Amino acid sequence: MNLLNPLKGNKLYSVFTGTCPVCHEENMYREPNPYKVSRIFEMHERCPHCGTKVKMEPSFFFGAMYVSYAVGIAFAVPAFFIAYFGFNLSLFNSFLIIVATLFVFMPFIIRLSRNIWVNFFFSYDRKYQKT
Ligand SMILES: [Zn+2]
Image (spheres, rainbow, N blue to C red):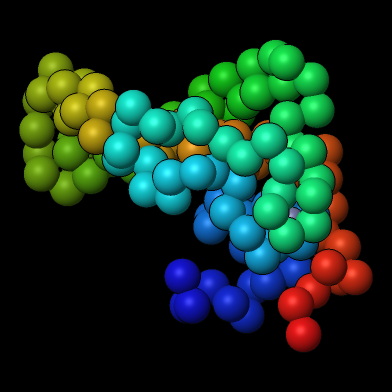
């Protein structure tokens, strides 16, 4: 993820890399690859670098479901436009493309939603920057 390094310190960095929202140094997840689906929800109790406890309360990530609705639409709409207008598929087939798109990207959408959700509540703190 070196490509995103210029974004460090910006919330987008944490959102797209899944790093701790406070220090941007360590991954929040025990398994960085979201496509290892059985481990998708495994997170560190506390950030290994700065000690932030991102899961503030037991059902904290319940709210990420609302975010995933918006993120899902952000995937579904372009999928529809590409299928319907780009490939001239029928309305029904375009709908199938949407379902397939959401299915294929689901692990990514779930993680992205959690990252966005957690960044509503935490902000980057420069004092944890690695020197
Ligand atoms: Zn941290």
